[in-house]
Image 1 (spheres, rainbow, N blue to C red):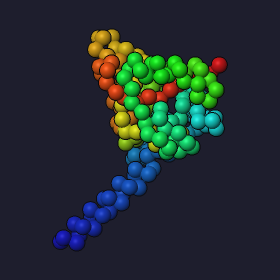
Image 2: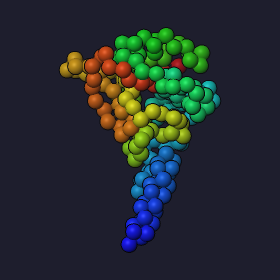
Image 3: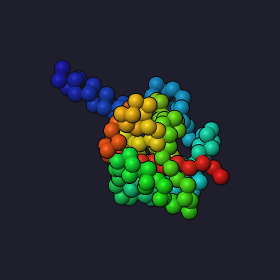
Amino acid sequence: MQSALNRALVLCFLGLLLWAGSTHADFCRNNLPASNPDGVYVDNGNGTVTDTRTGLIWKQCAEGLSGGSCGAGSALTFSWFDALSHAESSTFAGHNDWRLPNVKELSSLIEDCAFSPAINTNLFPNTPNAAFWSGSPASDAFGPYYVVFFDGIVETEWFESEFRVRLVREVM
């Protein structure tokens, strides 16, 4: 009985590993089509990705991370006001028009059929399972919106809280 239970647990664990490895392709859990498949993005080869649906250019790595797989460094956290200032001063890839995305833009990166992280990790590798600031203040003045890329939840929080940042710019 115990060995059958152990085998069942091992099979469940292996199934979970296989499922987790497939969540970031063009099909996700339960063979659902991805909401953000690789084909809707263009890798610009300079650390940025263009979303062909919106025309927005995204920085592939969260702030503080770098390299082709965003594996160098550690993701930085900022208060909301510091995040706004950091975005305004960025000159990444030779551009000085970086900004925080509004909540709708940031939410557009959520991969509906994935979690941990809930984003296309082929194009946005090593994305922390954490909250990322948007540039959108909430209408209740409680604080700005943020997106949690562990599960794609959108919430509001105090301005002083420290969250991660992913920068965006318009196609010129």
